[in-house]
Length: 117
Image (cartoon, rainbow, N blue to C red; front, side, top):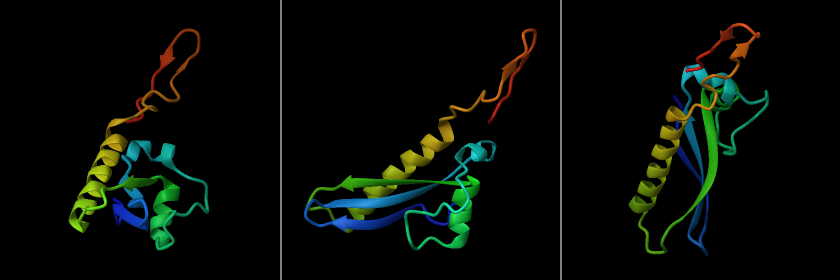
């Protein structure tokens, strides 16, 4: 489980656009597909070594994005926008598995079908 879920990186006050990082938990069976090269670090400079290690080993995945909000938005509204985006991102990680049959093979006679959770 990621230590944090949403991190605001910056706000462009002229356009009311927030740049953010989302961290989502990756199901164990798919972590190898999300693993990053050694030395990969979060876009957030405040990430702890354990946060970066989780990104490298694939147990956590990171998404950097932007969200424009209406100029009159209050802080609680902005927080709610970002929480909704995170909820959608986590659901996508949980529910989308393009690797479900990755590595399945056929030798000309028999299929060896894998189920990658």
